[in-house]
Length: 119
Image (cartoon, rainbow, N blue to C red; front, side):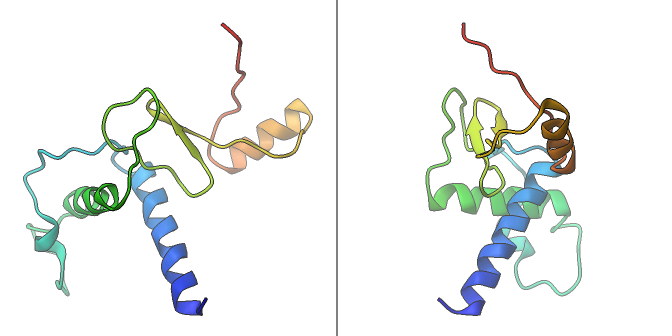
């Protein structure tokens, strides 16, 4: 595996994370902009806003493979290592931490600690 491939994978992860943080993560196929309007542009234009670019990129990522989260409609993108469920993304730790430390870890990830209850 070359460094170029690793760099592309890291960049894709960052883009997905940015999509998650800015403008939600639900695919909106009825958008009025097109992915092609953003390609090959050296300078931003009204045809290639950040929102338009995000929608187009999200559309391409959703076409590439299935991102259907259990309990949700449409395509949902989560950062690498996170699990989609319904309309949220969850990160499951492999190690047990005391409550306060776990909460701090979540805060560092810009997330919230959740309690799962059996129904």
